[in-house]
Picture 1 (cartoon, rainbow, N blue to C red):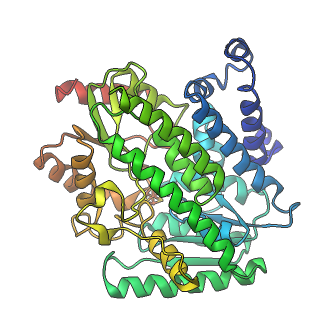
Picture 2 (picture 1 turned 135 degrees about the vertical axis):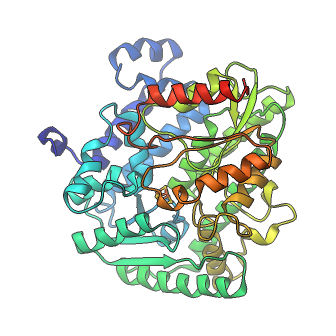
Length: 466
Ligand code: SF4
């Protein structure tokens, strides 16, 4: 790792940048745009976020608060749990433990550093990872393995049975850093009694582990409070998603990122509810005027990203889509699978229901919710089995009237690479032109954004979609 990279901790560095970025939005528009001359490096990410108005400001605050919580956790007497984006932080907040979500931190680095997170990605390989392991964890994990982050207290993950590379990252880290580790597991089916009871038992084990490691007993009142807040969030998301199915889609395209990043950071916390309320107001106002959420105001095409987005570097993907009049009706990260979600109509058993009646019902709720996190829900079994990736993507494409489907992931994602070709073939058979991107969502060295952009252009031109 280059010596200059070792000067600062990753979490502290991101926190400092985001805190400063948040302050730039406090002045007038004129002051903000005049200031940009002094931050050329961060202009590409700051401008599109701030252009989203109040929601953009709230998003910056949210990220700042999240990173600040990590940096200050030990001074505040709290424990840090390293975790993954397919693990809901609700239980951690309910037990006063601070989540350190690797993929979310990797995303922040990939989005805002032109130098990328290359040193951290590569450091993981220096200490034993294969370079084809998922870059989503490695982009920040390298820093923690090198001692360039807050000292974490425990590790919790939930991807065994779903993603080998994700699960191995956390198991490796536990051994390498000598940290206590708990891993939820996932049977290959989603909706069976056996699966439900497996999830429940596994989740009770998780709670016992968290109690032991944090010294905090689970508190029924606190848990109810967090789940009640989550319920509000799900209701707002349902409203927003119902409006997303309108043509034109009234939702600004960047809200996709705000929705899932906010949920990974603060599911069940009030600050995320406030941001969602602001977003719902904007989407409702656009819907009332039958206005597209795109900046151009003209929706040419509707795309469903069947997997994840592209984060390296700046907000290039969303800028590109917006410039071409292509709205994004969501991706695997932005859909949350509450049983009331518009895409679960006629299929409610595939979703979770929030039941705050007693401690057992709340633990059941969380076990079921965690079992419906991105990837955990739909990549646990064969791509074409009931409720799995193909079926759930096809339903999303229909409900949101998508004209095409785009896959983007990481080369390390063996689970999806193993099935993307037949998945794309079946999508095409269903009448949906499907494009497979070959870049890495977090590592621009695999394919430069220029090349990615050119290939996207080619797909839409050759398929005569634009
Ligand atoms: S399923 Fe793919 S993107 Fe998700 S953690 Fe695994 S390798 Fe990474």
